[in-house]
Image (cartoon, rainbow, N blue to C red):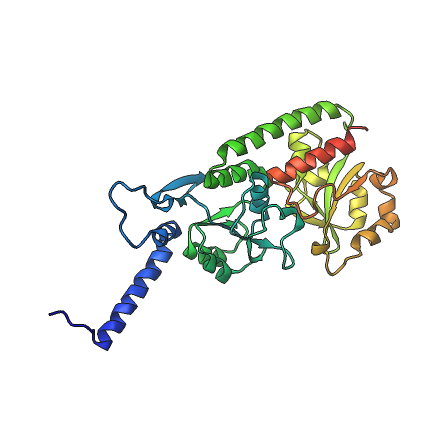
Amino acid sequence: MIKKCIGAGALVALLALTSACGTDNAQTTGAQTATETAQPTAAASPGADKPAQQAAPKTITYLNQTYTVPVPTDKIAITGSLEAMEDALMLGVKPLGGITVGGKFPAMFTDITADTQSVGEKAQPNVEAILKLKPDVILGTTKFPADVAAKLTQITTTIPVSYLATDWEANLRLLAQLTGKEEQAEKVLADYKNDIAEAKSKLGDKLKDKKVIVARIRTGSIMIYRDDVFFNPALYTDLGLTAPAEIKAAKTQEIVSLEKFSEINPDYLFLQFAEDENKDKPQALEDLQNNPIWQSINAVKNKKVFVNVVDPLAQGGTAWSKIQFLKAVADKLSGE
């Protein structure tokens, strides 16, 4: 005869074993955990259609690394990578969790974040918030320290998204693979190449021997970028403009003094200024514009400084950023 109760000691041991097994499963692979928890407790009747969550996981390749994710990959959490947020905006993907700036989602992401939960700021992921969402996959960033990346990997499959502008096509295709939007992504890439050809034809040789620079004001300082970072590839690679020597020699992101910047002396300047990046010096742009050294620069004297032609929080090296920036450059410079 089966006993109706189990000794207290045996019950405790059983619960502990069950809990340990659950933890091991969660840490082994998030894709498997997401699939298992979504399955119904009752066995499906023979011949019945299996739920989508029971489909075999798929393997995707991104920057020479392979990752296993569930099918479908409906629940995506984006942390640390505004690049991935821009790709989501480009493809119309609404992430389960996303990055806030100053405690709120930037206005540029309004179309995709109505139902998105905050999972922390760009450099400060909220691991607990991500864990509660139980995402199918986490899109992080290659900027994360090893300990942060390790914590995220323990939750579920985590893919570190590159912040380098040169990886913009791979980044867009990554999200497209995860969400089944490959055809849409390829159209975006093809359209951009056509737009580049049209812009080059429109600009002709008007900017030959002219210095065209993109700079950014952050924490009150002037920042310049290497020729393959930020918006620069759109200028110097896509449009074929000549990168000034100072840009080629710059670090990935480099602070330059106003005096040094005046020596670079650009003929055309695209300047980005976001209040969220200058909270301690909100008057930095105005102070710069009133400075005599600034006023001596060719672009300033000739009224060829264009401020925030795209959203000031745009990352530059993404499909969305490049498309928006190209439109602005073609518009501002084609009449020269």
